[in-house]
Image 1 (tube, helix red, strand yellow):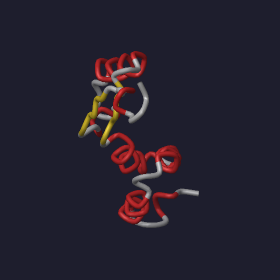
Image 2: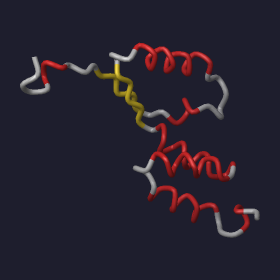
Image 3: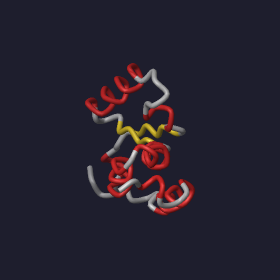
Length: 95
């Protein structure tokens, strides 16, 4: 079944917009058909949170930036990067 021809693309994008806070559903939408990838990635990668305490995550993010040179890269969808460090002494009562 060809999903692109059933409804205008704007209808699919509107539905995907309603899933903005459901990362799992957005991931599935991005795999349904190529036309849904931009709308899904817009919400999946618009804001990226990087915990500075996790060296592996920081390294993977830097590798993603380093090797993302095509227009189809997820890097083109990143608008905000929130880098934070988890401080256990600020969790109230934990010392």
